Image (tube, rainbow, N blue to C red):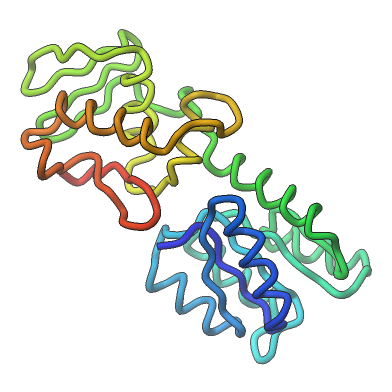
Length: 231
């Protein structure tokens, strides 16, 4: 699983964008046609937190691809266009694009747009979260900030509860360590990955039936973590 999907037929530009994205601690997949991009989205459903989509693609153009994406996903889409015409911007936004950039653009501007859209997509909204989240052996009470395992109160630190509530409220979605830190600690990433892993380990020991074989907080190898709401 990766964070960003780039759909663009410019091989050199794709390589450059992938390199810059990786320097931000994110991973990227590349598709050079619209059909290839849609196939990746289908194969890795909910894997991406952002799609960079060029308008001028061979075969299916970017607008057609965007229409297909919006039939099943609300993932943010950043449109790229070589045209400066207002009609392209309007059409893209009407079809559900979240932002757009006109080629040529600076890498700094591209990365700023990417970070902004990802933050918007992964922002944790407690207002949209039910007061009580119930899973197989775990119950989380947002109002009273408590967690119970098999009906028994489980003592959690403030940050452990924040971390659990964030992951459980976004069940099924994959987050990198950087995204978790930014959202739970509410500040720019300046945290040792090992400390995030330590928090996850402590939380597992408190909520998992078997911490060595977790059923709730799952590790997504090479990416980060996701909460399994189906457990």
